[in-house]
Length: 424
Image (cartoon, rainbow, N blue to C red; front, side, top):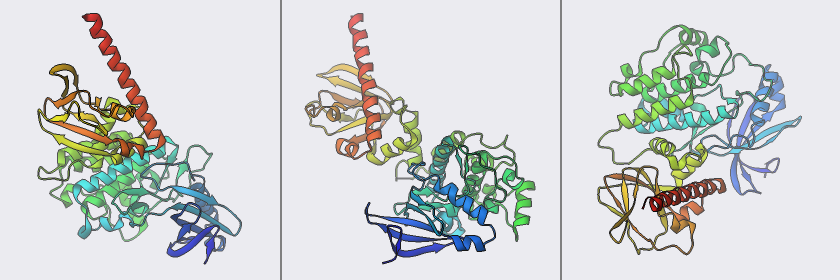
C-alpha cells in the first residue's frame, strides 16, 4: 500500500497546478484524512514557485491554530525538500459550487444559514489574525449532514507575521474592488467575497459576467450589478439589502464587521421565514438566540455551536407544566423566550424570564434526581432542553462554561433569597 508519510493512501481525490489531494487513512488516530501533497518539481516547473511555496507555508503555519466547527482542521504539516504535504480533516460532501447553479439552488433558509455560519467562522479567523482572501463556493465544503467547512487558507494574510501582501491572490469573480486595485486589505475584503457567494446562492448567477478576467475586474471596480431581487422576484427586500450592503464597493458603505453582517442575516432569516415552515428554528436563529441570553454570556462561538448540537428546542404553550414536583429528572432547561413560574405546594417560589435556567440540580448533584418543585409556563415559551447524558458528551471547555454559569446562577438565587429574608 502506498504511503504518504505514515498515512495510507486510499484514492486520489483531485489535483491542482502544484498539488494532488488524496484520501488517506490515519492508522494512529483511526480516521480518514485528506492529504494535500505538493510536488517540488511541479512547483519549479510552474514559474510561480516562490508564490506557490509561500501559499503552502502560509496554510501549513495554521496547523492546529484555527479550531472552529465551520473551519476545516489542519492536523499536521510536513515540509521537506522533495515531499511536502498537509494533513486535513476529510469532508465527503463536496463543495458549495453545485448549489450556485439555477437548477440546484438551496431553500432560502438553508442558504442564509450557510452564509451565517461562514460569517461566524470568518469572524473567528479574523480574531486570530487571519484574513482568508479567497472566499468562493469551491472553498466552502459541505459535510455529509449538510453542515459547512471553510477550507484553503493558503491565500490568507496573517497579522502575526511580517507578511507582504501578494498581488493577484484570489479568484477574480469573487475579489473585492480593493483587492483588484491592490489596496491594503482588511476583513472587509472577505465580507465582499462572501457577499458574492451569497448573491450566487440566491440567484444562481454571478453578479458580474465577463469573457475574460480583465473585463471581470473592470466591472467589479466600476459598475453595479443587478440587484438580486431583480433576478429573483420572490426574494425578501430585507435579504436583497443585506447582499447589496455586503457587496458595497466602498468600505464605508460595506458592513464594518462580521458581527454586523451576521446580525442582519439573523434578522433577515427571522423576518423572511415562511409561516408554513414546520422544520423549526434554523441553526443561525438558534445561535443568535443563545448569544443574546445572559446565561451564555461567557460562552465562545465554538462552545455555542456545541450547545446547539447537544440541545433540543421546544415550543410550549401557556400554562404548560414543564417539570413536576416528585418526578425523576435527567435534564435541565434554559428559557429562551417567555416566562415561567416555580411553585412548591401552591406557593410561588420564583418567576423565570428569558435566560433563566431550571432543573440544573439533576445535573449538578448525582443524588438530586427528584424534582423539588413545579415549573409551569406563564405564556407561550421556547425552551432549550439539555439532557445530562448529552452534556456529558460535550467537550471539557463547554462543560466548564456550564459549570461557571450554574455557579453564577446559584449565587444570584442565594442573593435574592437573602434579600427576601431581610425584607421580611
